[in-house]
Image (cartoon, rainbow, N blue to C red):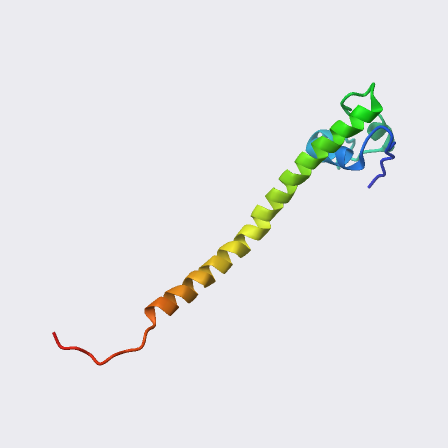
Length: 113
């Protein structure tokens, strides 16, 4: 467990979150010992790519744009994995309801052919 201090004038928290999430396996591989422990000196040595690093205002705008795109993808991915099974279940119930409604009509006297 660790804590990252993020200078909000240079990087957005969600931007750092997405970058760390994307690079998790690479970060974990830098760990030491049998468990791959990370320490603060390893973490502090990380270089986070910042768009337009020489222009803080433009950098934060670009980070916000990137975060918005990645958050939308994240929402979509979670919606598909969590929402889709529920949607399928509801559609199956809807199908069964209308099937039963359409095929359940009053019985009339049988007509001989």
